[in-house]
Structure formats: C-alpha cells, structure tokens
Length: 210
Image 1: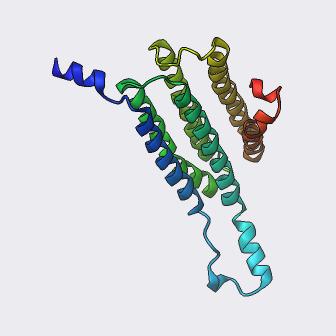
Image 2: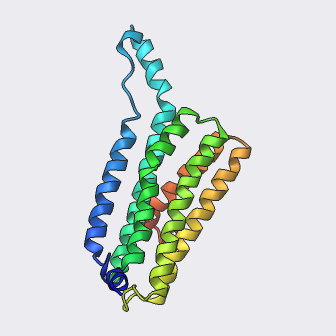
Image 3: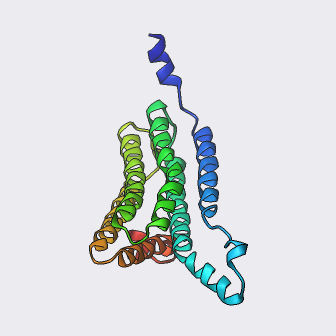
C-alpha cells in the first residue's frame, strides 16, 4: 500500500525534469568539444605543418558538428514534448531518464566515429545512439498520449505531427546509415543533410510538415 501511494506521487514535476535535462544536455554538448585537441607543439615547425595538423582534425570536427546538431535537435524535441504535457508521473519521468542516458552516451559514440570514421561499425554505433534517442522520445509521446498526460487543448493534428516528425526523422537517418554500404562518407553526408533539414525546417511550410 505504501509503495503504491509513493508511485502515484513520484516524478510529477515537469520543471525538475526539464532542469535535469537542460543540465545533462549542456554537459554532453560541452564534452563533445573536448575531443578537438590543439595540435602538439613539438610536431609543428612551420605554417605548413600547422595546416596539415588542422586538416587531420577534420574528421573530429565533422563528428563534433554532427553531434552538436543532433543533441540540439533532440533537446528541441524533448522540450516540445514537455511543453505539451499537462503533468508528469513516475513512469514518464523514468522514460525521460532513459532518454538522458542515451544523451550522455553521445560524446562516446562521437569520439568513436571521429577515430574510425571510415569504419562501418563505428558509424553503426553512432547511428544506434541516434536511433535509441528517437525511439525513447517516441515511447515518451506514445505513453503520455495513452496515459492522458498531454494537455487537453493540444489538437489531434499537433499530436500526430509530434509522432510523424520522430518517425520520419528516424526513417531518414536509417536511409543515411544504409548508404554506408556504398561509402561511409556518403552515409555521413546524408545524415548531415537530414540534420540540416530539421534545423531549417521551421522556415519552410513544406519542411515543417516533416
């Protein structure tokens, strides 16, 4: 009886959940840049050496920019959901804690991709990180809708748009990942295009439907 009562009152604060999310996203996005290291001074003896050292950082820079965009997109997605919830509960809170678990893994999958950018396994790990982030957000929205946690004034079209945006994004990411059969750079280029699509999407009525 005590446990049932506790479970009914636990995890109801959306504000505290948003605060935890903001803090963890900030940490993860900051950790990404730590993988961009200044060239070793002892190895640089001329302007040409410095240019070569900076060029060697290109894979890490690409991975950093990709992941920064990825985390930005998922932060917006999570905040959109939190703004549409009328209230939270214990189950919803733990779903979002699971979501944050995968957010915290992004610096690792990014570093792995940057170090082995031509390896399909490294790209697969990175894509799986994105996949579970999307699936967890979809789980959150599906649960909240079924449990009656979404605000009553949220129209059916808006509810469908939240779900559609997640599903379409993950489908496009999957297409990008599949192209690694051709070349990992082609795959990465498509993933970046998908990210840019969702960053600039609100500026276009057509893109906003995705």
